[in-house]
Length: 607
Ligand code: M6R
Image (cartoon, rainbow, N blue to C red; front, side, top):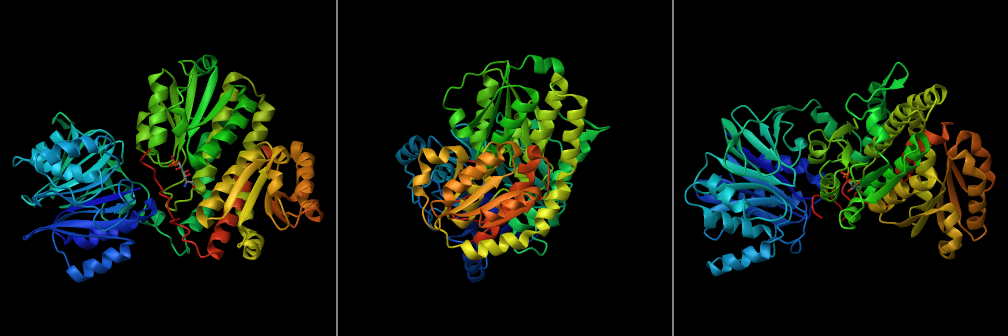
């Protein structure tokens, strides 16, 4: 989704804005631009395409100034072209605006502004904001922004500068992320921390409807009534290298290699004296007695983690679990009440579908426990309880390490609930804890055996369609493996429950069709072998992923990728690493832009 940066200080802001936009590239974009205050007015440089195109234009035009805003646009209203790129300028050229989000009532506002004599040059919703700020501007930019946002419906993160002042600029947000970076004699805004981390580690995380006024020597934050609010400084405790490739060819492979560490970081601090201690969540045995149903709500990869969550929570804690796509949940009028717990899963903590689902659940009286990676994100702030996945910044659009940690968090929750409800005995709890502790080492082994996966990918990257099959937890795992492949390699792929194939999909299997089969569940192993035989009999080429102890199936499949002999119950956390590597190597072989796949955005802040 769109990325925003802004700067005020004593330095030339052009390289700072460009640098910040580069750090936000991962969010996904199709055009970019900057607006800079200088003695001649507001200088805007913007164009369709990658940041390198913007850089070329900047090198020609050499804009200079100590106050500016920048933007990467992920098109929603109007095709990606130079005119629709941000920043947008008001009629007189006095106001420049960058925006992330969607203004739902922009047509109504546009009609009103046209009646006032404003002319529109773009197809965007954002242009109404530039004209509206100008319409309200009577010499006070802050008041003009306050009046403007009181008329906006929808979501926004905004950066606004005016030709009348190089001493301040204004930022505001609602339902789209925005932070303020606090420097020494300089201050910043950005959609995400990596954009400003080179300059400062101290930030304000803006809340919905807050307005920040940035000067080079200080920042004031107001609520939408114009009353100043006291903000707490959030100190970022990870360093720049966490958001850099550090010698790896892509962020995605770097992040896959971080999995042993982040799974350890997520699990170990929460195991004390051989029991699960979730200090950060406050759900007592009594609270659990009152919960008769759990909903897990999320999108994409996080949704797939939720499906694993259903299996394990039902099995361990005996509470019925329903898993919903956040974008469906909100509009299907779900039957929820105060005896329900809603578990929200989100890496970014900013996914708008998921955030709105959270609000829907709360409005109906349910308690919300979220599993979130980004500290201080909107979902974390609005939840009753948060269990952080300590995955660190995830930059590649394709989620990898966050998924492993989401699963780890779900296992911890399932075991905690089971212990509190008395549905697990001490011996079984101990066995599960030992399985969790063994995970980082098992993932390391998968990483060190990656060559086989790489070789297999080298021989099959031209596949037109790949099916993923599995039963039980392996089916849940297959869904995520299949998503990973399609989003970065653009190869069509579907995941099917092994037993469901014969009810239709098997018609698509023909000579040479590639099938990836997860076989990590002992109790379903033989049944899955039958499914493998069914597809083999119709000409499929099968790659199986299974524990070392099952290696013998190499006589019925074409390739066996082994993972260590982990307990089947936790196998998805290890087997997914093999699937992520497979998707990665397929995409690399095809020459795809692995970290920034086409049409996708990292943090999806529009519905
Ligand atoms: O930040 P979130 O976990 O809420 O994001 C949810 C999905 O948008 C995300 O998982 C998406 O599916 C990824 N591209 C998957 O790799």
